[in-house]
Image 1 (cartoon, one colour):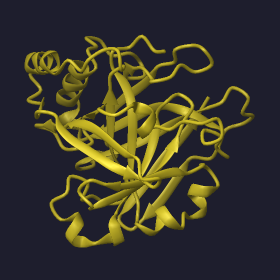
Image 2 (cartoon, helix red, strand yellow):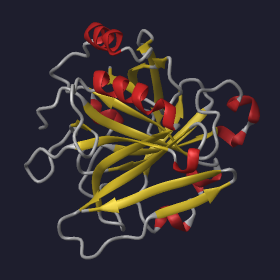
Image 3 (spheres, helix red, strand yellow):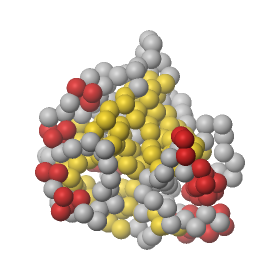
Length: 269
């Protein structure tokens, strides 16, 4: 088990609704999909890509691609990676007050709203409950939100030996890279340092742990931060997956255009 008090929990990939039920080749040729379910607000549905390190990629879609369900939702965005979540180990309670104090001292203007209840019903009828804590003072996806289990984590992240075997040979999440406007790098960096409780960033970004150790050893994941290319506007997320040690050769990066959005997933060992 990782010794980090902050852990990478999951990354959210927004896709068209049909991708959940008839996945295209770029998904099936890389990933083994696990069941998900309909969220409690009845607006979104998901399927999961579970990894051996305990993290997961959540494929989420607005049910029937209904514009009414999209309107006003925090993930009313172009298709692609839209958000990511942190969590804490089950034996270490979420220190909401401490998080607030660190952010207040960061000068970033970022804070978190009070935790709210969330949940979904799995395809097998089992109810899954959690609490989510959303950021204020930053766009969703510029900094992570938090997801803390109320029911057992195993209900939400039902890992088996079979469902963590993927054609792409990924075993976990190596890095989530946040790309922001050049003028926002310092502010978002201060927020990320406070959020991860890291006063100094390493060469790969801000270190966080994983819910499950990899091969008996704790392996860091990272939150990277860099400016958007060529003075871009807004922000963008990309994911880097860690390949197994036995994997020979690298995988081609996934760069899939869907409507106005782009899915960006890299691979590394």
